[in-house]
Length: 396
Image (cartoon, rainbow, N blue to C red; front, side, top):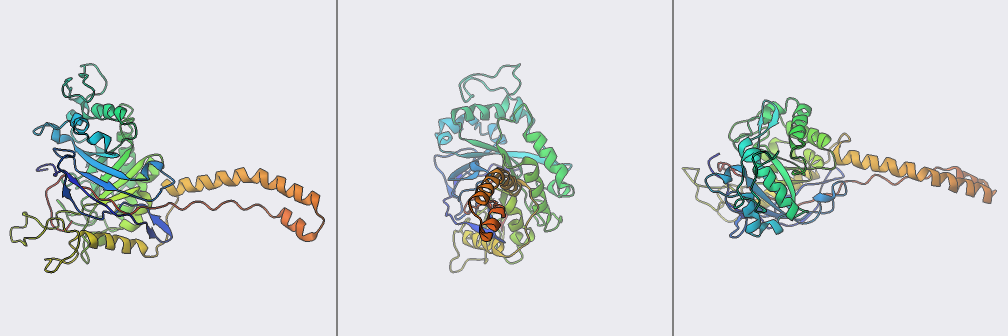
């Protein structure tokens, strides 16, 4: 990884997106990146987003201000978790993505263990002004994030895996999604820091397409991976993902089944930036993160509006739905509980009805079993967006 991404903020719009009758629970970015002068510095980008209610995971509902904290930013840039608090961002953020965990050997793995869990912070560097001791069980960024969450009890932290440099391992992980999900769960939910994290974020660049390396896992691989993660992490944890913004015909959005995977995620963060840039030695010179098309835009589909339109269009195509896992499983369990609770009431109503009437139609009505409420369909969100640290690549 060459350098952390610049701090950015993303204004959003809100609109539910549906996929085959079920809402697409995904935050879709409605605008690209703008420089945030007084936000998270040294590699912690921010995004704002709003979504409709998601009943399976209350923490996923409502407005969001999502920031990335990069563990390598604590070295040369000396940007510590404490700076999130002293800058005033701690009171404004709703979610922090900790970047990045590695993906290797088909499993989730620690990125930089020293930065994450071992580094001893001085009193001056610590969130609460208390220095780490040599014998405490957890130090490093994870302990500092724990302290930050104590100051802001509603703040959620997700561990993000992959990124530009470490996405090459997803291809191997896709061969056994269940084993990958188990490894991620075991790492994120390690008893030493389980209270620090509220879920997992996946930054695969890019499923069935080329980024830093090229992936040939097939179109269904991403959906299968996200499904396995939701099944393992359950409805009590957040599962999110940073995804491509390449809306060109036959581009990266077309390469993977993002619409099918949406049933498993709380929201998506489309990377609506790096459409054009200095990495392209032959040009063209054009706005880095255009919100809309304009006369003379060098490439069709290289703007945020096209990204959102394409994601919504793909979500509206009819498709067969899914096996019960994650929120769908939670909805099924809730429905079964309602049916069990309704049964005694139904029997009492039936007995009362039979005792109070002698008409044939009344008897038929009394014997008819009470209908249970239909299981709730997951609500969805639209709008979202975020930045991630990596080498710029045209056509996100």
